[in-house]
Image 1: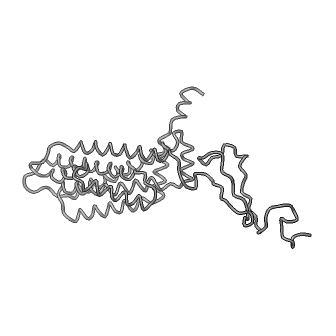
Image 2: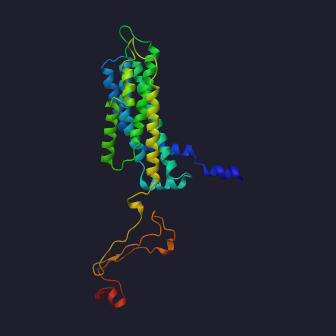
Image 3: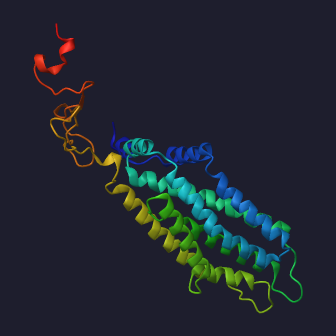
Length: 294
């Protein structure tokens, strides 16, 4: 085997990882609630008869909770056993597997944002009175939608364990990004709402986009670091349970030689011994009840 083949084998294959996570997401059908929520919000804005700036600003704002929910679903849909197998089969380990899942979530969010922005552009009405050029209004709104998608993916990637804690964190972060005056999402949406005016700014909201991209990089680094760290739960290793000699019906397996849950010497770990009868271990006369003796 040549050096190039060894280097190619040590690099992670991104295409199979992305295809695996995407197919897992599509087959799980957990993408339906975020997509249905997005469709409901789009229809709500459509019935209002809004103009281009208002419609695209509304689409940018609703992309934050929708893409955050979709990201949470993408990162949490995989069982622990499948996640361990993928991490073991990937050359980069769990960090690369989690980065691939985040890339799939971001790609799905971008597709959802493109569909929502296209729907808003197709169903919105022209501004009334003096207004800025239509091309600048649409471009401003598209950049704002991109800001909403990236910000939603960032808040959805926050490493918060537990369904209730993750939901509360996602809701609070989305509200803060939408309401706080210094938030990049708030700044991009406000600029989009006023983009159809004659005195509107002629520059696109590039600064909010750079800020949310930095936020996404930070949340991605936290998520990848949390995934590669020690996990607590059933996969963290066995523990010996204390028991009394008189009330024991068996013996618990001893702790493996490694703290990560993988035994370095499998032959040195005794399997658990389970007794079906309430009798202590010992030689033949006392092992079984008297009725089983000849």
